[in-house]
Length: 356
Ligand code: FES
Ligand SMILES: [Fe+2]
Image 1 (cartoon, rainbow, N blue to C red):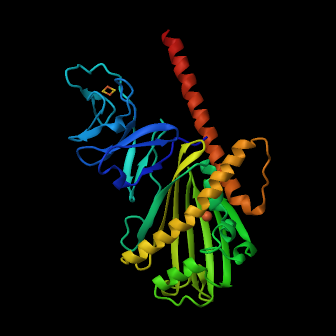
Image 2 (image 1 turned 120 degrees about the vertical axis):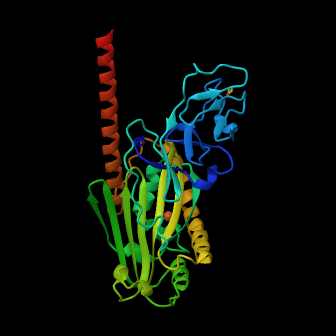
């Protein structure tokens, strides 16, 4: 179960530059492409003629042409033309609201009116650099939210890169602010693990001194997790230390459900030190990609276990509070969405009764 009335990342902009892209999002099979003005478009990946996937077609003069018998589709989901046929009466297919912004293509899979996109302070800002990637993972999107809202696992899953025993020892605090859930952990006067030593060097800082380290995870609906992370040379104020004494960044996680048990995981890191250093962007991206691929097997095997044993009750420890609170927010949104859908269905039935 996932909220549908929400903006999700559908794809990276370059994924639709050359050819139409088929992607299942929230159980909807969708084709994404660029129209004549190079704007991103999202339609049902279903040709109204015989049901062929439109994504097997191609874009001609900004119009998507079905690869089976040449039906030409408009960006609004209406049929435009077909060689030797009259297509005016063809039923339209669904067109989804799409926005390309902040370096991502966003889609609104629900039928409710779209709201504003989330504000991302670091995007479109020349003082920040971003590097990231996309993983396909066979797990419920909420397992990924749990993973990101409790970084205790770093000590075990990421032992050789960002893990350290002090993560386990530092208390974690969780608070809820409306629909936002924030989990924070601070470690003082610790050794920097290898990934952070690389980042310190990348910012021209020594990598062999004690540091203060922080992790502040922010969940916002539907399934976005932005994590303030960093290390500062010890005793200089930690997260508030002057910029020249720390290496800090934001771990960016946009989780787009594909099905109930699979996700498109858009991960990355935004940093505001040395933003023009492309080699640094590449090495951070490479390191982060390696780290996140370590989560992949854990999540997929966890999902398989849960599917095999739906009756098993799981435990909730204090480290799980971030995930638990995030699920409460999601559950609240799901309830509201269901109530709105039932209200709309009742209204439609009543209107039919009046006209019958
Ligand atoms: S199935 Fe698309 S044109 Fe026939
Ligand atoms: Fe992880």
